[in-house]
Length: 192
Image (cartoon, helix red, strand yellow):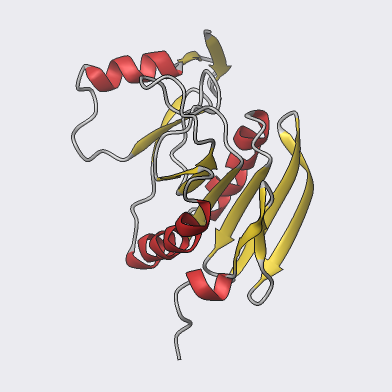
């Protein structure tokens, strides 16, 4: 798949595929420790993680993993093959126990969760990638407002339903109705 995008100056650029992205990685184009992901054909730098971000992911994983053990696979900050031109690395995603081809990244998920501290705008834009990949539920945790935006029912590159949840309301993983978490248990403690 080859795609072009017009720049402001009218100069077309070539968007790369996931295959191209992997060839570049294998050729050593990216330095060790480079934090990048492929979003809509563009290699994009990932926001560096702070302590609040990484600890929220750890608490979230500790909350979900025991309940999903033997029922689903939980990936933390791993590549997700969303399309031929997108391979984001969500903070956490839940997928089947059957992982398919060992040489390929998962291309389906029951649920994707992103944690936003300074990446809220970027993570909101990722909703279209996840909807396009038919991810049934996308949960975006906003640490600054201590809320979660939950997207459901993918329809093309959009979600038909969205809701905002605050602390004290359980967030259910729809594919596993008995599995839930509360923001109060995974978010950093508020400053006194």
